[in-house]
Image (cartoon, rainbow, N blue to C red):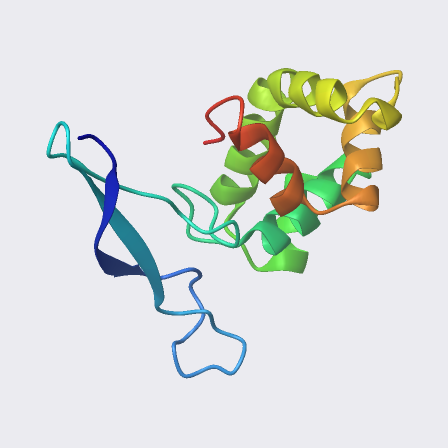
Length: 145
């Protein structure tokens, strides 16, 4: 009989803030599951943790909105205190995957409508909802990272 069973948990840092900080989410328990059929384990990240990233969705949304508003990588680096390479990586991630994500979001939420370009679409999405919610919706259809 196949099915998933709880199989403990592991802990992961949700952000780079110090664990003692009142705003820190660290450490977050990530539940693990065991498949009875194949005897493999798997886990599912909570929506607050961005897959394969050190920084939370809120910081990424802030930086992406700054970039979409026309700020340079350097300005975003100075305002957010994130490395230029990190800001570039987030910009490139949205540039490469943005079309796929916008397709899934539009198919699920037709009220997102048509926009002249990807920048206008993402500004609209991030002003209407959070990046975390948008990526959680996309995760049902495609791999987010």
